[in-house]
Image (cartoon, rainbow, N blue to C red):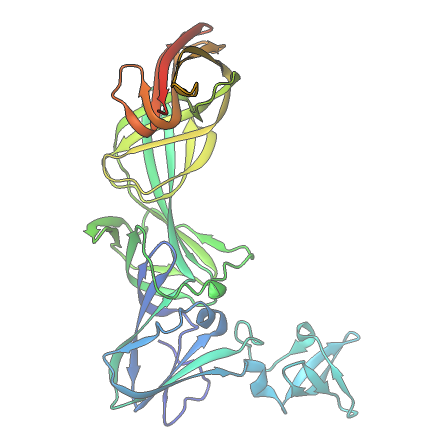
Amino acid sequence: MKNSLSVALATATTLALGTASAADLRIYPSFSEVREPVTADTTTLRLNLPLDTWQNILTGSLDLEGLSFTEAIQKQEANWLSSLEGQTIYLRRDGKTEPVTLVRARDLLVKDAQGRYFTARYEDLQFDAAPPANPQAPTQSVTYTLAQPGKGTLSYLTRAVTWTPRYTLKASSGGAQLGALADIRNTTEQAYDVRTTELYAGDVNIQNQQEAAYMMRGAAMDVAIPTAATAPKIESQGELRGLYRYALTTPFQLPANSVTTLPFITPKLSTFERYAGLQTYFDTGTRDGNLNRSYRLKADQRLPAGPITVREDGRIVGQTSIPDTRQGGTVDFSLGEDPDLNYTRTVQQTAQTKNAQGNVTKTTYKVTYAFESSKDRAIRAEITERIGGRVIIIDTMAPVKNQGTATLKVDVPAKGKVSKSFTVVIDNS
């Protein structure tokens, strides 16, 4: 790591975590564990962090491993400009540059050669030395009193570094391929020279959510995509107590306020289907509308949750998100209505049973779906209808309690019509 001060303290080792520093990252969907090596030449170790980095650290997660300490003091330090108070800087106004004295850095109060005080704008100030990034922002320091000098590891949990997989499904008449990229986000001024990285996928709960400190800045971030010659490769490391772990095989740079995109998994599809789908609930009314453009697939690898873009013959036909899916699990999603495939749903009551008091206890319905297609090719339609009641019987299926599911599958011919029905018995006796 690099020293953050122009003059090193004689009695303390001062390390800046605001510059790009070597780190190991364990990145989860909503937070990361950062592990950075530190070396103390004296019994006092002082660490400086940018304020936005500190604000994203989960309270109570800062830890120093490998070095015993008797005390740790956390303190907000003044910004860089404060170190210039009482010194001469330069101010440009009215097209001329003149020396002024910086009286107060907090509001940029200066005094000119005539002894007049006024407030300047930072953009009009000039300095003898190059200022650091964000010279008006304070930093946070942590000072450890150590038992003895040595080497250790600073670790903390941060909301500022996260990752998300994103998928592209490329489909054509010849089949489909599924590819994935991993987007690693860093939303603070802290840059990392990443040595080793582990990505974790799954549902991870942590005690201190600290939502107020989770600041996803609205400012645009740079997107860094490695070239093919140097791109790190992500390899699956298997399952860890319900989480899936992936490791990067080579180091990479994670700049401040950036998104670094790396190649991710390339699963093979064992199943890929296109169909027109509709998911709905039972009622006795007549309805009509359009079916949805739907897809179903199965992959030979576990798929972490993330957005998916679908391309047909190289053209984007829609985007959605998929949930965490086990190896060989079914991914089923829709991309909006298909105006070329219309349905009309009608319900006919065919039987009814009443008790001695005249109350209806059992009713039988015939539900019919009529499909009409204007497409120039045949397509399969799938209807899923959920039905509530004390006991439900669908066609010849076994009775179920509370909720049943009726499923219709029918091939709709090109520019043609077709209909299909099912019977529902709702027994509330």
